[in-house]
Length: 201
Length: 255
Image 1 (cartoon, rainbow over the protein chains, first blue to last red):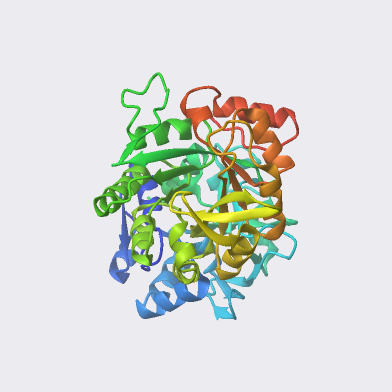
Image 2 (image 1 turned 60 degrees about the vertical axis):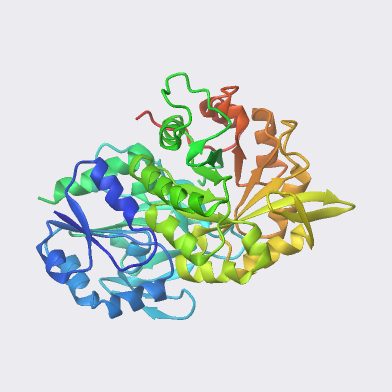
């Protein structure tokens, strides 16, 4: 079973619908025991960073999520779920993140259309099981105003061009995280989710 | 590089697609889920479902529709039409819609934009603007384009952006339905006024109109209905045309 962490904000169902389509057993949950027992964990997310962390505190999810990400089980952050893994964000003030990966979350620079919204390409900068069967420079769907600056450049496995190349796929051990929405990126996105699910056995 | 988007718009009444679609292989051309799946497979970058029924009963059916589409369609979709409250928006987003678009309700109570952006994030909030040329500028109309507001369209989009709108869906009332091209002047003026994405709507008659609005009109995306529904052009044909003329578009994979 793959646990999709439910922190009661926004559209979390799209990921569940995509896994259903792939025939993968999954469930939305905020129960620490179910997160701890899952074969893999997905942290989805849309919306504001500060509000999401507030919900994590209120639901006592910080500990269980950190444990899942630091365990040997596969873990995948999506969009805000990628950003939450980092140390801090500058979205509307300064907010602490889950601090699983060192680095910060910053806003796109002036002069760009923000949010960065629509289909953009991911340049494969290193090997990843998530890229299996997916061509370099494939398109994925993005919708975000902030992006991550990892302190450790080694974790950057995929980049995207928007006012410069930024990290759109990071990976460290069994922790994977993407800035785009694979669940909304058509067959290519479903393929990437299937690649992740294959690791969860 | 970020691609320009092509977005088919489906008008929905009582959870059925109206303005028939012409997919020969569809058994039920009125089924929004089947139409959505078809367009997704044909290379649409996003979908917009516009609910043109505005009864209370319709609110429930559009929520069910949002969930049914979510289970079957794996590209982003926006739901608009008659959305009046945060609760309406929350229900649609939780059901699986990526974005909701608000129009009349936002003009009546602009704080709805701020509240929605704070609750769901800017990227989920599309402000739809229906504008009509008046003298040297453009005026905002509400109630499906029937009621003049006296509000200047450029002032309104700037205000909507400040309040937290993530995108503008801009319809030219003058151009809509004539298939003689988008209002490129209006689109360019709005695109210059804000730094959020602008979706152009109203007037598409062929690929050359879409090319013009994505270049001269400075739009980030083009929305069209009848040219796709009646099978005049496929999305692939439009994208091929754009690509040959140097516009960056996503050529889709089969599947």
